[in-house]
Image (cartoon, rainbow, N blue to C red; front, side, top):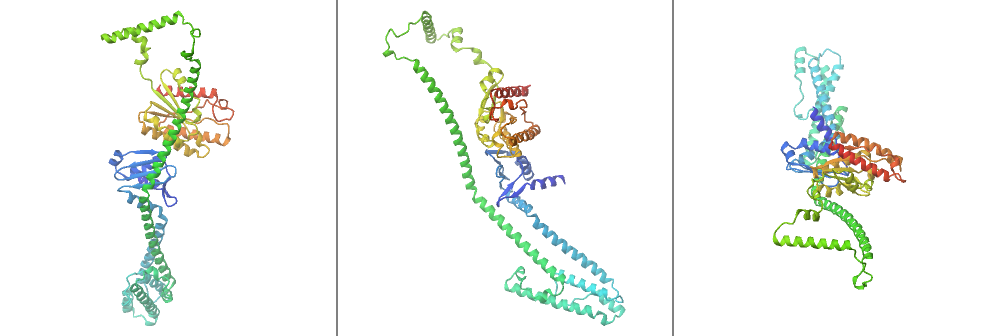
Length: 533
């Protein structure tokens, strides 16, 4: 019972939006639903992956799933796709099946009523009052309408009545109302059967003869008319179900035809992400070129063309500079002679020429990447590396980046597989997204990073306090509280940043001042050291 309840709750996440199938649950719920459909071998051989931001795919021989987390649209393909789609649509069309259940319950109640009435007819006493005859006539009304295979050529006979007549010798005047009523019922049923055969001979369906019935056919009694109406309603429900099935199959054909359009849209998304990365790289190159040009201009001011100088303008070299030049010449001569003779140069000369030997043979430091939005733009990685001799810090700041943008920006970093990654995102999503959407998106981003770089440890940094808008400040508190609980449940390290207050913000109340950037740097270093300890 528990497993059936779980499956029913998972089916409850399905819905329809603009004639498209949608999944309103989380990624974890979708993974659990897929495990209930496929077998263990298919689950072990295939995995979930995210080819682009906000899109999750699952490929196996039995079932292929494609889910867009933003639009919540979902599509299935594979061997079990048709059966699964039929099952989902049957769940979505459940109110129609409830109508059928109501009609079946009504038929069952009528059958039980007929059975009770037949028992009452068996125990009838002809010496009783005429009230019993009227109830028996009502029973004959109900029984004649619920019997589908009635032969109108045979007269209705009851053996109980014949036995009663033979034993008691009842007067014919007492049975005359019952005989007259049964004759009327027989005539009505003959007319109904004759008209049904005539309509069938013309090629008309039973549902089309609703408006062509004679008033004599419905004048037999209120129970007769109600049963006929209920049968017509059942037929109409059947036609509606067939129409809905045809509509579902047509939508499936349209989805197959639109697969090329989906591939084109996917390529366009990938192209847009590549354009963004190229623009960012071009900006960085322009900044580096500007810095190099400033350095070259400063050097050109000092440089003097020797052709246009006089001997008096050339500064006189001191004795120390001459001694340095002589030493360099001697070293060159020693290296050339040793290379020609095949003898290795002395170790002292090699160490002096190569610099400090300990740097070349030292152990590699673990790399820590801090990826975030404009909040971490003033966090200096080299200064953190100098103060912490055990780690090498690299800061990747993407100004104005949302969580969906970070899904694309983080991919070049995950290809290098750093030792640790700290995420600080979500500040730019507070205006347009709810706290639940922000926390779910951050959790999906961590799963994407773990899939792309399994050897990297991922940590999440809490959003910083804001002083520019009170509504956004309350949102920050809601996001941090739910995000901390989710990280604790999924064993993800979480940095609280509780020591940063409004005094660490600039005049606008959003970004950090110098003191705030230094305190955030210290938080990152303490966070990494506590993880290792």
